[in-house]
Image 1 (cartoon, helix red, strand yellow):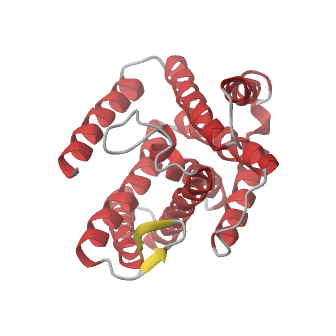
Image 2 (cartoon, one colour; image 1 turned 30 degrees about the vertical axis):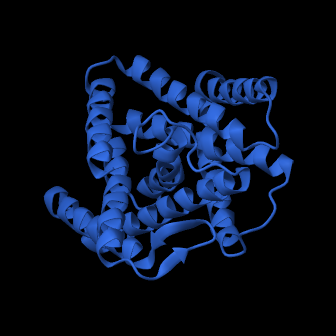
Length: 261
């Protein structure tokens, strides 16, 4: 399984590199939108007894919101980022009371709160500079990699057994330690105060964990293990972007709040 995960990760990284460094910016932005549109299709699988027509309608509605934000209402970005932060805070509180029933209306609404603000955040970071987009991706990947290996090696205490039985507190600590080291290294290279950058990156990493757990709640409620099967060993689009969707809005807002741009 580890070999398959590594191969998939390498291929995915190569595809990301081509999209970010080879394609024209407008094409890359559209590709990001298509990626999230595929995530919308997967999210439609969380709806109550979804039919193809219902899933198609849901995907079209998400796509319409993405297009409106991109082409018509780009000035809504800041409001969407704030809305996303409020949603992820609520989701964090929610994880403590799970398992709970998730009404159909909440399943519909949550997909919008996850996918639309994350698109706004990713486009904003991409336009601010490729280094900002890559930085938030590195934070999420470091948190994920650190959690995976620390959890495999030291994992004993379950983080949220009713949501994701495989996750442990030792894994969380391992992920945060790796993110802290990454942030300290970046702070040293970029002459940024580590007392500002390290806590900020740790907060972004913590939110990325909330994103992972939140999508897992919806998957568990829908009775599915993975959101899809596009990435062998990793699952679907949502399985790969759930953490990024949570981390990107806070990261984009924090850059401005902390004057890190």
